[in-house]
Image (cartoon, rainbow, N blue to C red; front, side, top):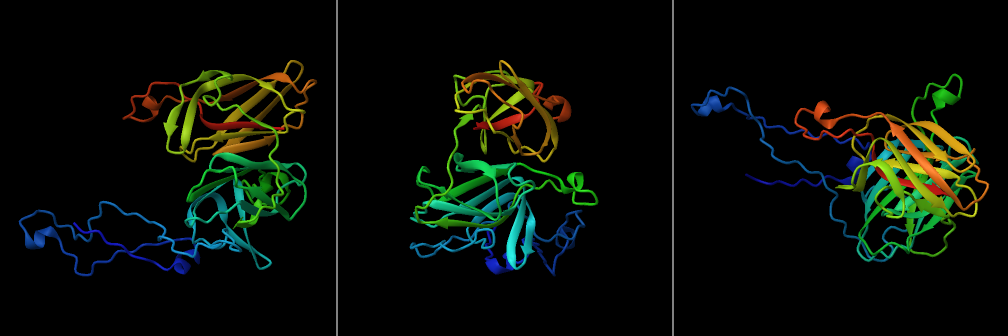
Length: 346
C-alpha cells in the first residue's frame, strides 16, 4: 500500500472551478495473465481513499488577506455552497446565492481580523429584501437591503480566536421566471455578491437588531411540542419534527418582528413544502414556502398590538418513516423536517 500526494497549482483549479481527475496506467494487466486467478478484468489502480485538501497556507502574518476578494481569490477557501456559479458583470466578479450561501475559510495564524466587509450588487426587490449573516454560528448582522450596491462591514470581535471562519449568508429569494413575464430563469436567487474581504480595522457599519433564537432545544424556557430530542449532527445540534411542531414564546422586542429565518440541517437536496403560522392574541400570519436548505421570509402582515406579546409558531410539513424509506434503517419514527435554526428578527 502506498500513499501519494499531488500538488496542483491553485490557478489551474480556480480558472474553472470544475476539477477533473484522470488516472492512467498504460501497462495495466489482468490478474489472469500472471496468476491462476480467473479474474480477466484489466485492472489499474485500487483506491481505498481519495481526499482533496487545500495546501497548507504559508503566508506572512502581517495582514495576509487585506485587499483580497475572497469571492475571486480562492486560496483560503475550504468549502463553499449555496452559489449559482461565478459571473462577470462589466469586468467585476459576481455570484448569485440561492438564499443560503456558506463559505468556510482557513485563516492564516494570528491573522487578527476584526471585520468582514461584504458588497452586494443586487437583490430582487430593494427595500423589501432581508438578509441575516452569521460567523461561526454567531449573528453578526441582519436587516433590510435598501440600496445597491450595498456595502456592509461586520464586526468579528465577538468570535473566539480561531483559524477557521464559517460564514453563512441567508436572504429572501425570488425566481425570475415566476415574477417576470418572458423570463426563463428558473433559479431561486438570493443576492448577487461581488466581494468579501477580511479586514484588521474597526469601522463597523452593520448593526445587530434585536432577535430571538427560538430553535427547539436551545432555550429551556421555550415550550415546543411535536419535536424529538435534539441530536448532534456534523453541522451542530439538530431537532426533528413529527410533521406538526408548535412552540410558544414571549416576544419582548420594541416592535413587531420583521423577518423569520428557518434553517434545515443539510441532509439532502430535497425541496420540501412547509407551512408556517404565527399567532398572537389578536392576529395571525401564515405562509407556505418551498425550502431546500433555508427560508428567510419577511413578516409584512404580522402586527402586534403590544410588542411584549406571547406568540405561537406552528410549522407543518409532509412526513416519512425512515425504516420504510430505507431498507437498512431501524428508525420507525414519523419524521417531518430536521430543524437547525429558527430566529425571529425585529
